[in-house]
Length: 301
Length: 264
Image 1 (cartoon, each protein chain N blue to C red):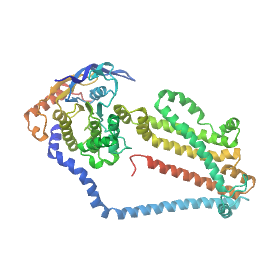
Image 2 (image 1 turned 180 degrees about the horizontal axis):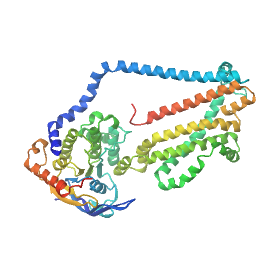
Image 3 (image 1 turned 30 degrees about the vertical axis):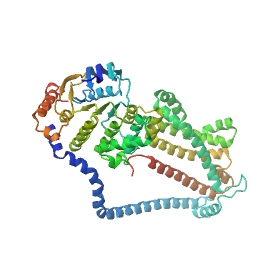
Image 4 (image 1 turned 120 degrees about the horizontal axis):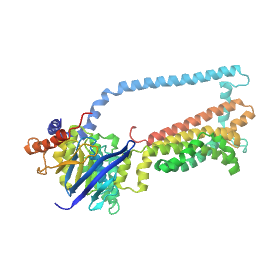
């Protein structure tokens, strides 16, 4: 066994070493292009086409079901009246006739603002808290019962507390968003900190890096993918919750807008709002997925 | 020889496990002189990595003391650089940045940015990795990663270099070329090295002394073999050198006769 090792090494100690780095970039560049692209791109476009057809038929099925329900249930608008209502709404999404009558665009933006503020505050508190919980066993043991107790509570249950403390419907809605966003952020950040490989921490210890450098150069980059998962979950929940919260608090926002349109009995508008809420949620999800991919080291490219 | 740089005195290491205390090492006494290359060899589970971690300060002994320059080792430090078995490069940094992190930590207080960058580049040139300065660790091969790991350790100009099976995860050819590389670097720098290995050839080829450890649990130093081969060693010449063969035989005899591991 050991003789083998030595004699094999005898054969090419220097050559292997020097030739390898030079040869690797050159070989694929000259050999692969003519052969590879044609079948690969055809396979790709076929797959893409299949996905597209599947997606279109899924949406088609949804519209068909909608049509049938609209046909049987009185006063439930079908796709065509809803389409007309949507065209009308989106012709001027940003009109402003005073605080009780604003375009759907404004309503969405107001909701997004509440989500942004509530979620932003939750990130400011939750991410550092997650670092502490993940890094120190005492903090973990201290926070675990509190988090397990409070996390399953519906965020809306916190709304009265917010109204009581802040005496302001808008702040109360932001408070609800804060509460529902903070748990996934603490939990994912803490899990990320605990999952940092011991090897990286050993590097930090051997270099005797300062605590600041450990956090900025090693912990933060290592935990970032986990943080972004937490952010994505938090934003998703926040967008779910804001609609419900606004129905209760009133004011300008897509949630209250839905409720208002129900009071006006304009069901077409409610259906448009449901689509808008869905599209915005989807956009948030994809934006954060893109961000997560952008910041995940290794694996990608 | 001159005063030893590292002294291990009556060191024992006990781990508290779920099944009760586990004695990994006992009664270890070892002195390492400046400029010496010492290999720790033994069967797996004999605590050779534990001993290295004790010298590194990554773990502290439960008995006895480890001294570096006459002072007790109370934790890890950049004067005792470690080359980890799995290279441990930070994947979000380029090769250059990985080495620079270490250089900046050690020399950042006294040198300009340009000097730090020059040091980083020189270290990577020394292991022939200057073609991949801006590559990320996941874009280069295992052997190249280990080179960068070695460059990072050498760039710190440590008083002693600790290597934990640095070439263990590499194929035989890559391992040989990295061993040659290491011999070249050592000839240039005169570094003091402690290396954990399970490769007999590697131990004899690189070392001034081979420390052979008995089987665990409660492992200790069994024998110490002094390798008196001339120092710029050449792999090809040594292959036919009877002295080399004898040293190898001595280590193998220890490992496979005196410390034969019972089949699991």
